[in-house]
Image (cartoon, rainbow, N blue to C red; front, side, top):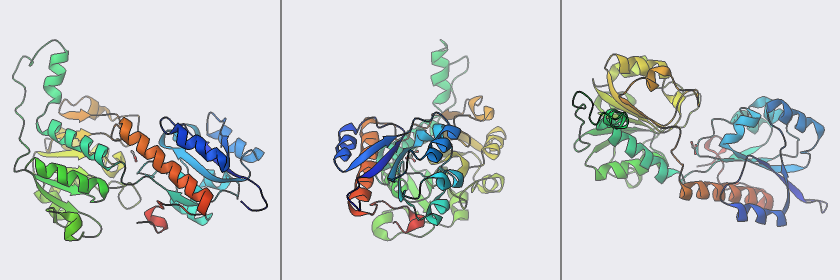
Length: 335
Ligand SMILES: O=CC(=O)O
């Protein structure tokens, strides 16, 4: 932009599916890629001026393995030309939004396109944890068919109360799916939704959700307000034998407290896709046969990965062409 200079876009991470869309950006901007293998090298690369003139950054969830958290130190190391960061992911807890805002950098994420695959994963974990399928799946693979004792009997979703904590796009998608399984849906959200968006799901207070749910599904973003929102005190308010499902971010739940609640039987079973210290998992979870565990697979489908990349690229394109993002995060005034 300006003075006939071409804009630059920096790619942090890899494009796996939307390669044509990414390449088409080269008609409106020069693409720069990082050569850094770790955070120190990335910060050094910033200092050398290699990224000077970069207007917009495309970053992947996995790029955290190179740069570390996109925190204040990283943000302050960027050249002042950077005005936009387009994060490929719905959850953007890896990025310090406040640090971005202070520097006048706008951040986008990928809402909505993740809803189906993430809600499907939650449904899979709800059914699997209710039916306690992890136990017979393990005995069968150990060459022991149903084990030396009968596997534990599971429960039907029909008639059970599902408490959805966080009624954004994923929560609402899950609500519709769970309804088809005959579940009663209650939800808690910062703001109560209108009838049109809530459907048959009933709004309840946080305390009522904890007290009434047979299954609690966590569908909240991770931020300072939601970190450890479920801990020892909250487990204490839940029904005996409650099932916990988390497809959001591990640290929304206090993982130590969850392990204790599983060990003392308060929580009958859990279905987890996310953990507090990924890729490390609390040994109290991996050793517990009543816990169904996935390694952060919520959006891991061809369709969703492609859609997330396309959405991120469309934000990069919008930044380059119009000087504004389409999917600005909530903290910066997005929806
Ligand atoms: O975890 C996946 C995402 O935030 O999109």
